[in-house]
Image 1 (cartoon, rainbow, N blue to C red):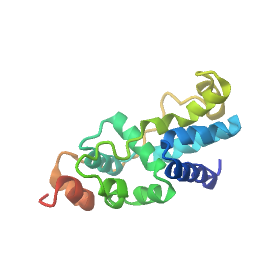
Image 2: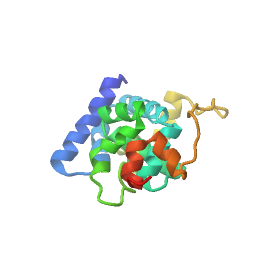
Image 3: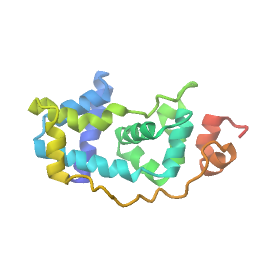
Image 4: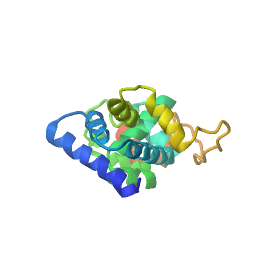
Length: 188
């Protein structure tokens, strides 16, 4: 699937969510379920590529600040939430995770930001759409393995960039100054 087509699907779901008030993940599943099986698999492949590209320490640090902590499972959900925010936000975050300080959901959160941008269900939208059209909960994984190939057992390690201590407020303030000021307070 071409990258523009992928983002068109995301943006259309975002627009519909805004106009109907329906949850984004549900709208995304409905939109994907109207597409041929092959396109759902292509969508899933592109989603994984974009999702994997955000697997970096600096992005994880941003999730940690926004969520008041962030487990590895939480980081999976956070990256899905960044994708669900649309192309413009995705590209901003990929270039500079500190830009999330300007994201409306992050900036406007009163106190608790622990739910902001953590969108677990978005990770499973392609599988849910595939199940909806096939009626078989296992069909997606089987089709995906056939389409993408099974995950290699010894996949190459991803370069996540430089690791650093997320609990070191001064380090977080140095690396993500705007987010740290927003999430930790101005005195850090």
